[in-house]
Amino acid sequence: MTQLLRDAYRYAVLSRKFEDRIIHMGMAGEIPPTLHPGAGHEVCQTAALAALGPDDKVLYSHRGVAYMIARGTPLTAILADIANKEGGTNRGKGGVMHVVDVPHGVLGESGTLGGGLVVCAGVAMALKRFGKGQVVAHFFGDGGSNRGTFHESLNFSAVQRLPAIFFCENNGWAVSVPTSESTSVPDIASRAHGYGIPGVVVDGNDAFAVFDAMTTAVARARNGDGPTLIEAKVVRLAGHYIGDPQLYRPDRDLAAQKDPLPGFAEALIEAGILERADLETIDAEAQAEVERAVAVVAAAPLLDPALALQDLYA
Amino acid sequence: MAVITYSQAINQALVEEMERDDRVILYGEDVAIGIFGATGGLRERYGGDRVFNTPISEPLIVGSAVGAAMMGLRPVAELQFADFIFTAGDEVFLKAGMWRFMHGGAYTLPLVVRAPSGGAGFGPEHSACPEAYIMHSPGLLCAVPSTPADAKGLLKQAIRLDNPVIFFEHKSLYGTRGEVPDGEYVVPFGKAVVRREGDAVTIVAWQNMLRRVLAAADRLAADGIEAEVIDPRTLNPFDRETIIESVKKTGACVVVEEGYRTLGVGAEIAATLMEHAFPYLDKPMRRLAIPDVPIATARHFVDRIVPTEDEIYREVKALVG
Image (cartoon, each protein chain N blue to C red):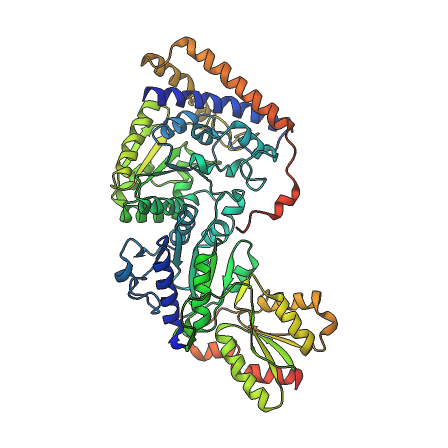
């Protein structure tokens, strides 16, 4: 666990610094401003992914790039996908929304929010049939939980006892709509009771708690006992998209948000997993890795538009 | 050659492919009994792990097929009525049709969605032949088998292909009988078949409309009009060449379909002929199709809007007689 959480912190820092750079380049017009920033979610995402094994599968949501970073996808590949350059993962077809890295178990993302839930059930169906104890985790938001696909996937996965973890990152906002206007219950995890599966609410800013909840859910899934719905309460530090002025959010809502990243660092130090001196090293190494990736992608050629006609059929 | 029903042919195809490849799984609403008879007995034979009923959850049925296929299984999912393609629109058009493309070809999606279409008396949400929507949409192969032999051979091929296939089974055909080749065979996608040779007019039709066209063609022959009847068998890939070559010979073309008229398959064929066979057309292109209204429940209403044998006979005779 010690090493896993140390790595999770490193991935979270790397993701934050990478996204800050992506946003900067996007605002400057150097790359398309297509990222949906993950700031505030990274701790939760990387801590949750730390509980998965290398053979497990991940379907992710649109909020940020920490998912792929935590699974081992190179920064250059992610940035190339954003910049429509050679060296990316989806050859100009999906941008940052559809980064895919099958060897690392990153299977992609649904453009329609909540659309991945049913795909996840199918992945879990296959993993169950393979019988190797693999699991799939699907990350989605509070907004996505209001799709009918949520109901269909959780019901079916429960009936079939599929090895899936449905991980809801609830930041309280579906673009501009607060959960108070869109969602019938304060805790989305409480909906799990309707499917006869465990529903767990966890503080998404507490990496240790997220890791524990995820570890329990993964063990349950591996053991053939079926899916778990985890709801992590997280903060959305940035807008929905790059340049979103967030005029729809009350000042008090924004002011109440606390960046979980420093808290994660303090918790790791307190637990004796990191020394304070490590923080600077991690920051510096992350920044250097970001700059290396930026340089590599800057030098890469734009994708050949002939690719627009490829990859549809096998 | 054995004579079996269309429904039995589909069952045979499923059995043979499930025997051949244990990655093939079959599921959907009521598949354990098979309400149209095509899947009966398969759960007993292959077990509940490979053949299972699903809840009434069409997005889940198709979406999970995409997930299972990307992991290497070869799912055959059933939508109990082809109209439910729209219930699972995201999963059919955006997931099955686009996920491989959108993810840069990172995986293949070898899945089949079986979709019983057409028929009379089922009502507006259970009667459509929505193949034109599939033909219009990138990424989805589309099969429209008309005979037991093709139903078996095309389904076996569909299961083996590495691309998503929407496989339309016409409900009025399930009980029809025909010869099926003995032994192992598949029918390739993208190869039309000439069901009847002639030089007076080219008629393109498939599934239940093909049956009516062939009956009408016999009557036309008695009047001295020899129609060439083409069954495309698949709409994506679509064998334009066979139709173009036939029209070069006949100089006239009629498309008879059980879909809506506007932007139907007939419209695509008309455009194809304008682009590739314009100098050969001696007559205006004709389309017989449903006049852009939903398909009512009353059977005599259905007969009013779906092309009948009489209507086909009259229209073709008026065109080239």
